[in-house]
Length: 294
Image (tube, rainbow, N blue to C red; front, side, top):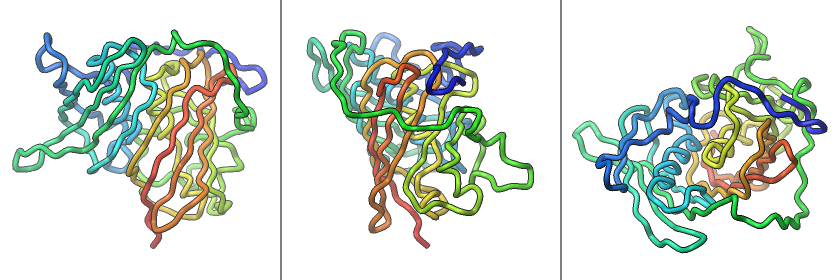
């Protein structure tokens, strides 16, 4: 990846529409002539320990809504995670709430099956879609890209020594991401967390597929949780996640910054910003997550 001062487009082997991410988020209409009900086999490749990553699930539902609604690009999508999803068959049901000239709104739920065959709802979302390419170019902002060292000075899972500390849990999703963490937010991996709720990284997919609006739904939830740098360990399950897609990302590496200002009552918030290679804020999110304090 290029550094922030001279971003360059990556020339990888995978392209948008022909990558592992696209194959693993593809949904199939039950009735080819009628949108509304979709089948998918959730891939084990996007798991953390045994649970499917929430950002991957959001991308799956986002793809189903893009097929259902007259507009293709998610502008805002809010998800409530009801029960943990597992790899395997799932069904998605979508509904059109409203359609307009510039925005359309829909809702969707993902279900899996209990041992007795009954459906269990895993996640429910409400989203508004539009056309990112039709937005005006006027930008007035005080937001600034995160200060992250050049990628060659940052560290990923492959840089850890064989006998050194590892990211807790399964490496399945780690193998599908190209994440290089800012050393200033890597103390948790060395047994010396800073105590600050911060996580920053260069981000891409391992097969070099460029980012698009749907993959940004994964990006905001793909870094290690800020709770690790606050000295906490273990799974940090998402309760609610809202993502705003601001513009179509340019080709090249992304920079992700996540911060937590308040942990109370066993819950914390994570505010994420995603910046593209042209220094544009392309996505923002906030999630509420549960942490294990004991």
